Length: 269
Image (cartoon, rainbow, N blue to C red):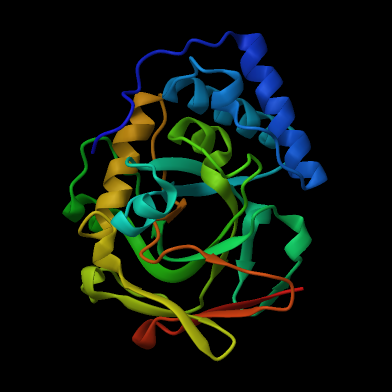
């Protein structure tokens, strides 16, 4: 896919730490900050991942437990919706994961939207250069999920650099309770209807994620290796949305119907 090459960072450690401070404050105070790329015009993709890594390191130091990764911008509909044309990734902390049926505080997030995805629970590590078959062999199960997007950086004019710095807009995820063996289901053809109340707002098929959602996991394994990391056994990986993001508001009951794989729901309060 096209987009800015990873390249090398242009920001020093002090600037990276200052941006991580801004984003941590925005998350805490439930506010947004101005575009990073408008204020740091030379900022690169590698700078953005450095900011994200520093933000994540502070979270771990404060006692948050890392449980996985999310992949973003893997489908054409999401790329068209954001004007960004390459995938990205972010961290998932344990306190971001909700069971289906949970009531979730809307004000906890900024620019709140929901997407429909599949999540992979890994039983073994996934290495750089993995194939679809490698990912499926490493997967314990797949489960339907919804991602809650929260953007701590203003939306208008965002680039991939802003989004990566903002932990790929990861706010939270709601996980279903119907697990599937990835060898028993053709994951390309998993489909879902996204409801707000009784109304179907979005629909999609999982093949929209790079042709196969496991390819998103393979992409992530290779990208993490570039940063000295890898996907480990036990991680939960959100493989990318196959619907456009749906804006949600306090009082909304949101449900994703995956048919044979069951439903995932939450209410924003």
